[in-house]
Image (cartoon, rainbow, N blue to C red; front, side, top):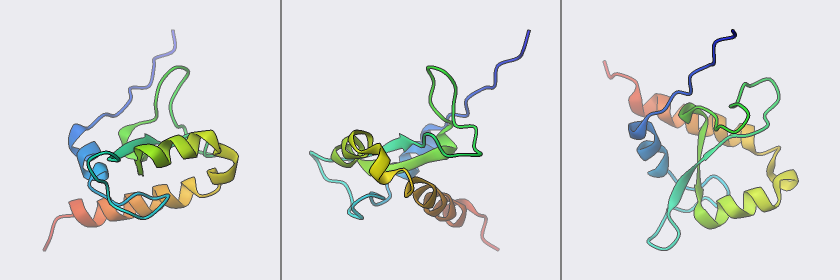
Length: 101
């Protein structure tokens, strides 16, 4: 039997991503259009999930609810931006979580 890869989940990291500005429009969230975590999809060379499952939370990108819907509705339009958004989010996370000296 082939062992299944475990999906890394972190509510603390998801809350951090939700505190960031939206990668699609650049604005922060508000009451009726909050920032949610979009789990990156279909980036060549990265193992981003499995059949019927999401990518690890470390592949989370901040998007408004409406921008998330826009992303999925027009995936071909935005798919090239997704790796940049992911790198920007990860760089911000490293600066945020890195220990200070």
